Image 1 (cartoon, rainbow, N blue to C red):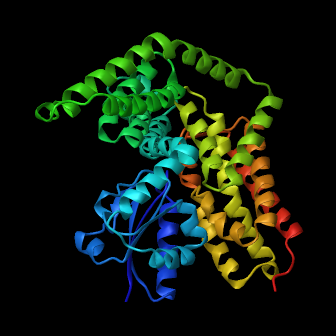
Image 2 (cartoon, one colour):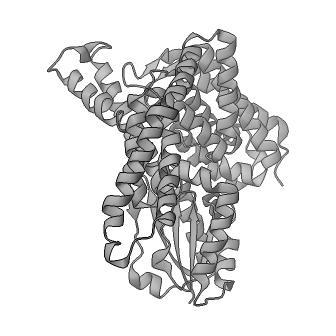
Image 3 (cartoon, rainbow, N blue to C red):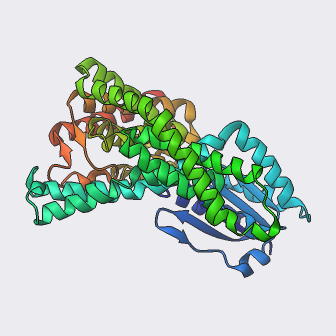
Length: 454
């Protein structure tokens, strides 16, 4: 029996990672192929591939949107694809991987091809999403702890020595304080590996201290990564001194360059941009708020966890540190409605869907209430021209209503499970109505466009 090993990883490590792993396992079973899939999710590495697994494998599939270390697969045929491809067409990936020829220089050729493709198309996105994937657990943990602190009273944390004050110190003073440095550090890590962490995190700290915020953190991450990469290629030490390169030369030079640029060149203008953005969001009119919510809603539904969806999510998450909570509410609500609307449609008009889609609709309820937009992917893959416009309209309605009602959200994830936390959501009744309205609109649009299933 042929054997394949695989690695799946997505930016958030929540849904795509495990959906891709499951689809690859199902496809391999159908083709009579033995497979073991390692998932690199938000909880860490699960089902880790051993040296024996890799040694006995005929091919390797890497379905990832973040950086995956390929050095352990040396000499093996490697098929590297976006994580979404494993969700949409896992069977063809398994077939393609088995047809690949093994050769001594295969890894080198694959690396060269992907370096060119990454630089030309997806490099910056992958680096940003690597940073975001490491940042999200800090934001979620900090946001929930802050929300629990508010449960004792919106100003209870001001009383020193109390439990609310301690929760605020842990969530807001520590977890949230690390958000931008971690984002910046792991963007640099994605570009330059481990040597990028130090200047990346230092640049992120300077972004916070200079007021440049999450925008400054993104810029400092890319600056640090490419600075380290440039230094590594430019400075060649004698073999006897190569040991000081990672512990002395790289950290000192890269921190000096990134730090001086952040303080004297980048920090001030980015601070001005962040201040202007914050002031605009704080003082925007109802019409501007509705338009912003509509745009964020469209982005959340457009690719269901892809680059456009993650851009909207990153924008809203970054604003939490600036005390702007309305975009986060609109983004989470708009991300919940696609699977919820499709689940509702399968419930009220079963003749429009296949038996597999009706079964997927049951799971979509759980994914929707958990703020996992990817629950809509099976429906969109089967009928994209009807499903994608429908979910975009529903999410746009939800995002616009959430902003119109002035709903706020202090926690960046969790779906309905964070709604009962006192003070986590502002204007909770109208926020729930926004989600229900978008769900109903999505279902109505799907039923309007879809014909009876054959």
